[in-house]
Image (cartoon, rainbow, N blue to C red):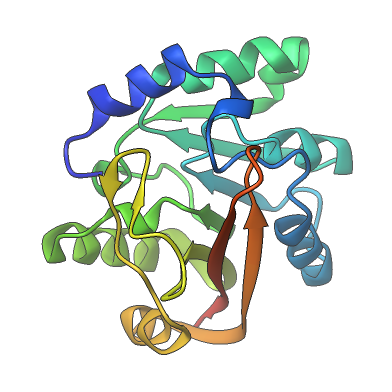
Length: 204
């Protein structure tokens, strides 16, 4: 995230979930997509840029046993651990910039809602593409959500990179086949609308 660790630590230290645009009470789009994959409850699942997302709660509720949550902000993950209480012990927590992530396992499902679009430099984008290409099992799945070409140009005061269905597919074409693409309006906690581009991929 372009050396923005201090930025994100400050965001999560000073703002509550209802004060940031990306908050969802329930991650319905992501969970519906995952449910349709019919993965084993022992599948390795990672939420990249999990922050204070409620996705980990939903995954635990569904009975998934091998969950990783990665975020650049240690503060964000500590807050989620506190929220989960004893359930936090069932999750693998990773404090890392995604472009520096060295996985110790390979994953069956990689989830990224609103992290990738913060990578605006070609070097960072290429690092992400290489990391995910080496981190997902054969026929494993990847769901990516970014701001669309009709979405915001900034988030949390930072520049982002918008994506269309075509540019998203082209970016990951070497290792992944796109299986489903769609746009979606996200209503923020302060009743503004952000248009997202989603694309589901399968490892070639």
